[in-house]
Image (tube, rainbow, N blue to C red; front, side, top):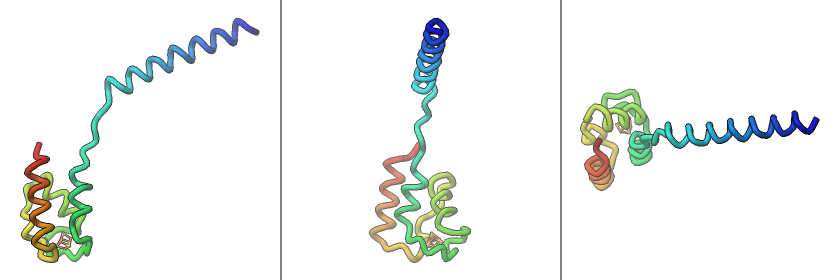
Length: 91
Ligand code: SF4
């Protein structure tokens, strides 16, 4: 009984160690640029930019180089903030 418990503890410790190392080695940093830009957009989902909504526009701004000036509801200071963010976080 004690032997079985010790074997299970050893197997659990080894598996935990392997998973811990794999978690660190294969860690992928999440790209939050689309979410960050989406948070800055007005959120009206009006389609005035030619995209399906603000989510699509945020994705286009980050991944397709869309022009923030296509979003007319955005205030000039917000547009400037988005431009600065994209310039600082280009990949
Ligand atoms: S024009 Fe602006 S507010 Fe309207 S859907 Fe496009 S990003 Fe959103």
